[in-house]
Structure formats: structure tokens, C-alpha cells
Image: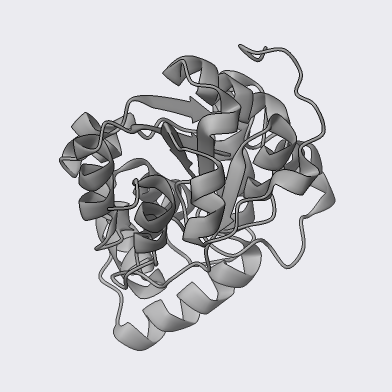
Length: 255
């Protein structure tokens, strides 16, 4: 349950990426989406090649590329949504961000619709999202989190996800820059439900009115209903800056 009372309707309070918006709403905390905002999954070819190697199979580049294309169409954890969810996976798919077992079963089930001829391949593909090496933090993630920490602004990661992210941030040397994690499978709420944003604010002990949510999808904009400001950025490819500098323009006091 959320740590705050249900908020008033704050649909008119969306924060625009301008200093004028920030000056009307001092920021004491920033909530960040994970995938597409702070980090991106590894390139599809690398994903398929690494998973096959863990099964003792070396894939030629053309075969890896063909498999990657088919698996992306089927649906990848941290990647494109499936073109079609088989009826037998529909319930798991609906619950994937609420339960660890549903997340794993949904995505391994989707991968199993692609016949790769490799024993254990679907499980190996899923295991890649559970390890830090299966993700690539954006190059501006560390500097922006560091600048917020130096300014005394609290940070939480708010993600619709079915597994723990804390080890990823520790492996990247970023865990000391994150104060709390509001993960859907732990909170029992998924974005855009305002409850998950309110829980994050409760973890940080900050007022939603002084909190900025940063993400890359309309679900992240659900934080408006919790009373938070919102900044939605376009998702960038792996290794490319994600535009997080705009967060500092909003969150840090004007010089």
C-alpha cells in the first residue's frame, strides 16, 4: 500500500523541461525509470550469442542475427513487446511485473516459441537480464546521479519489473547514488498506478509535490496523478547519451 494518502488530481501539474517549470516546484527528490532511462539491454546480437555460449554453442553471425530478429518479434525482456502473446501465456504475461515467477515464465515461454535447436536456450536468454552484463547503463547516468547526490537531492528507481535490480547498480558502482528502489514486483503496484510513485516518495520521505519522475513512456507520466512533476525523455540506444542532462536543468537550483 502507498505510504501517503491518495493524492488530489494533479493532471495540470506536469513539469515541462524548462527552468520556469522547475522554479515553480523546488525538487527534493528524483524518481527514475530503469529500462530506457538509466540503462538499456545489450544489443540483440550480443544477447543471443552470449546465451548460446552459456549453453555450449557458438553461433555464426548470420544465424545469431536471424535468431535475434525472430526472438525480438516473439518478445524480449527489456526489449520490444511481443507481436502476439500466445493464449497459454496470457495470464503470465498480465502478471509478469507483479511476480518473479510470472516474469520468468512469460519471457521464457515467449522465447520457446522460437525453435533455436539449442537445449536450455530460452532459460539462458532470460538469465541475461538478471546479470549486469546483460545491460548497458547510459553514459550520462553516472554523472547525473552523482550531480544529484552532490546537490543533496534524493534518488529512487521506480520500475515495472519482475526481478531485483540492486545487484546491477552495485556492479556498475552506482548503488551509492540510489537511496531507494520501488520495484513493481515488490510493491505490488505497476506504473501508471499512482501507488508505486507514492511508495517511492514514502521510501525517500519526501512530498510528491517536490518530486520529479523521469522516464521514457506514458506509464511514467502516471506520476502526475500522485502529485509529482514528470519529465518524459525519448529512449536512446545502448551506449548513447539518454538526455538525462535535462534532469539537472529541472532539479538543480538556478545559479
